[in-house]
Length: 82
Image (cartoon, rainbow, N blue to C red):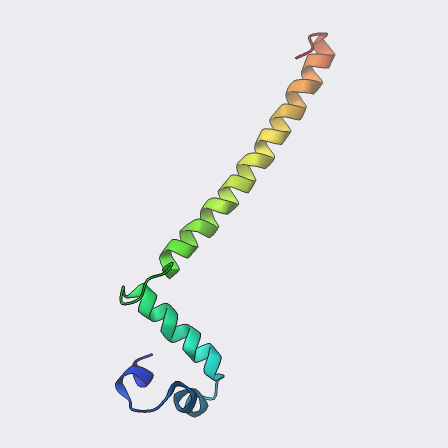
């Protein structure tokens, strides 16, 4: 990002010099601006936390389903229906 920000070249010129696509560099610059607070949006850290929490929710939902099935099974085995 520093090469682009400190230079006078456009994103396309900088990307070409780095051997990458202009849109890729543009997205990286945009995300860096969000991360340093100079642009509004979801920071990389916030995005990572959301991904972690979504995984945790999925895991807890799976555990809940397993426990519900186990409770129903044991209720049938003991003759007590929920």
